[in-house]
View 1 (spheres, helix red, strand yellow):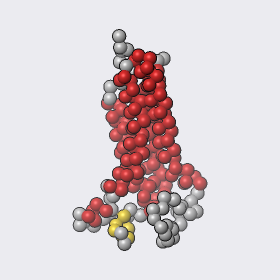
View 2 (view 1 turned 180 degrees about the horizontal axis):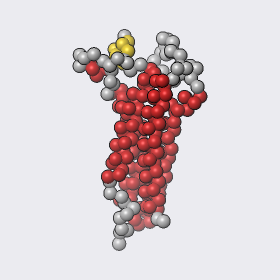
View 3 (view 1 turned 180 degrees about the vertical axis):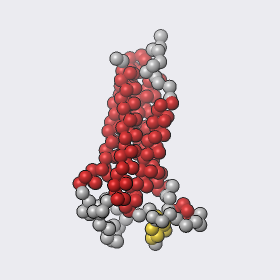
Amino acid sequence: MTGRVWAERVARWGVIVVVVAGVVAVASGLALVWSPDLPDAPPDACPDPPCFGLDLGGASPLLLLLLMAPLLLLGVSLLMGGLSLLLSLVAAVRGHGRRVLAVGVAAVVGPLVVLVGGEVLPHLLNPCALPDLAGMEPPGFCVRTPEGVDVPDDWHALDHALVGFLPLSLALAWWWKRREPTAAAPPPQ
């Protein structure tokens, strides 16, 4: 098999891993919402923000692994994208055309967009702050703090999964399915 075929296959498996990461993100968010063994965080858990540490107190190791699994899967997908980019580069150098490079670039950029967008998008489309800004009553699960209305800590992971990771990973899979495959194209003469 040629390098472009392998680049396409590795990239396709990378997209599948991204979709699995989105589904696992929803599962881990639901597990965190329904977990009975998480104590409430003390009010002064972060005296000097920004604090990026995740204090889950007495959480089980299985729950911690489940919370980290989407990020680990996205990391695996980024590694697969890097391999696909390398294979695409080799195929382009061997004369299969520059168009094959698009497969490798998309295989790296896609998971990167899902990772960054999954972290940023839920903060822009906050289901608690948007209704409050519009003068409407926010949903019942929201909490009011001195800074305003926000998603409570135990719902935070589910918010990131449902607003960020899952929609972006499904959009990437949809785009990948609709694009024209480069491996099926005839080699240039």
